[in-house]
Image (cartoon, rainbow, N blue to C red; front, side, top):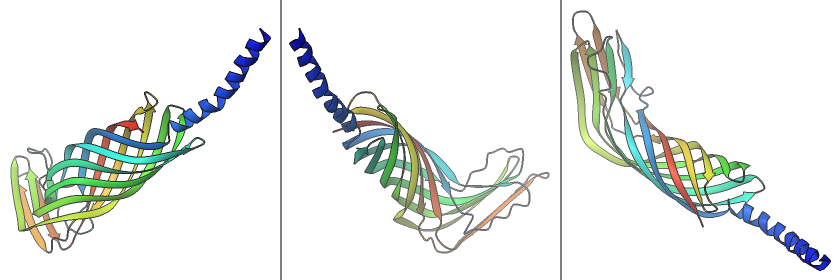
Length: 252
């Protein structure tokens, strides 16, 4: 009996270090992921345009679009910290224009913005995270972004009640891959040793192409309300993308 107890004790002591290594390896190594979510695009025109709104509110044009993402990378655990690097591709097809006012409206409204599309968003990121427990990881990340953008011109819109006026300045299409940066935060939960779910929010800011000089103006009035907008574009402008997505992760 004493010999059996000694053997069992020896086996237990031998397995203890192995258990520690297995737990550590759960958050170390290569990984792949795929998933989807939604996004909000916003044109940041305030630095390069002038808007005239005698009565009402001004809106920048934007778009809300679904997206899908595939990613891959490598991470390594050190105590309760996890460091990683990853690259990702996000498929998104956002068409947007400057007509952002609701119609009809109970208050005068004016909107200005660019007309075009944004697609194919690439990201390279590094991350650092902390383990809340062996199955839950919270992380922050940041890096560079690149997006395919295409623009054709600008739209200015004035709305007063049911009266709508729109003016568009067209130009030769500009197609570019522009770059910028991204920051984000996530929480990831293990459902098995090699499978987890990640939920994250990401903010991207990429440069818009240089469209040269454009100008457009619109005025609308219904006798009681007046809405007017004008835009004078003389250079490039940034685009902001707010993304929220769920990713199914596989560790190798």
